[in-house]
Length: 351
Image (cartoon, rainbow, N blue to C red; front, side, top):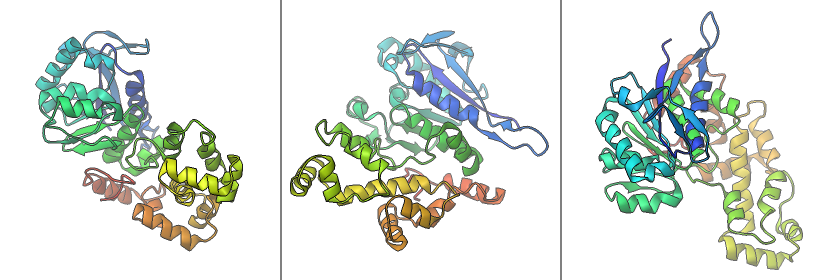
């Protein structure tokens, strides 16, 4: 098998995790050879405007090739453009955008991570496209490039050959999506397990989960409550229990919770349970019934109905999408289906 060539576009002041995350994902992708060792699915290289580039963090990267020696016809299958403060420096931005304008059209697939969109947007190739970026820069991107349709709460969006993704770790989500497109869900899930990350991150395309939003919005006595709830999903998370945890009366707790989070405690607890259940469904050592019980649902039928209401898909059907035990034919079918998906909502698997 000839590995697909992935190029990471480097520059001074790039974000090191925007580079390292996708690199690790692509290099971890391997398939079983018929009569030999596991073969690499990708050849990954860093191409940059100079031989050594320094990230925002001070980490130095040695480029495999310099941009002036690389063209769009250099056999690059997928180009990844990381973000970073350096790409918002006028001189660097002009240099990177000029190279992209000349060569990106000759590359099969082009993806931006986080603020990497600042390098591609000036070329005009994203005009009229739905795009996303780090939530903190979404408004600025929309103002600078009014022809883009910016969606700030998406993890990643596909428009034709172009992919845009949200902040930092969303680059790993996007890399897993590209791996799944190329080699099917079996290889992508193996990579996700190797990296100990979600294949389809809970919370769908929202950039941060309910527990993180909960903690970010409160520094008082509720600050550590969400983390405690996640560790005790199988227990009794009634209002009385949560109120006791925060040293409030049940009435005070409910009133303050609704006021600050625009949700009832019961609805919030159920959302946590369903998101965790979705993660556990990828573990085929547990039955759907066991997963339901492990996150606090005492009745499996109640769990199934709640799961379908929230995600629009039955738990068993959701699990089947990630079944490592499926045949090669099933994997190919899933791969073909995945190429038909545009912007994935909620689970990133809904058509």
